[in-house]
Length: 176
Image 1 (cartoon, rainbow, N blue to C red):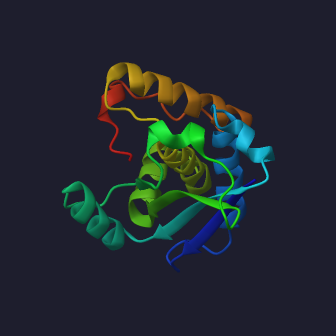
Image 2: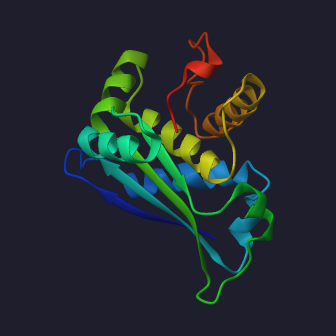
């Protein structure tokens, strides 16, 4: 089973059920990977999703990635990719996969530029972040194409258009 622990700052509109959106996005991403079988296992895989402002994300980006600017999404995996296949039930029945943090201002601006809703863009970024927690990356062209294809497939199952349809350089993404 997958559980989402969500915290949201007031800058994120309260007219959206962000926890339901995050759960739907992360569950669909998990189901599309080799760890999809976890959904029916007797332990709980937990992802913490933090919806915050640009200043907090800038601080995290500076402190952990040495990039002093806000970015749309940051992912902080708790399990090394080579250990994901060994995940099993723990003493308390929970496995923390990691944290995903989204910056409102950056997300809102990007959604507007792309002509999509904030909700669809946040869904994409949570899918993207979940894949990072599961060991996927986009450092090279081949990795980027593979990860982006999974994102396209997952988003299509959620009724969301291909977010990369206008991108010309697969390695130009700043999402992490």
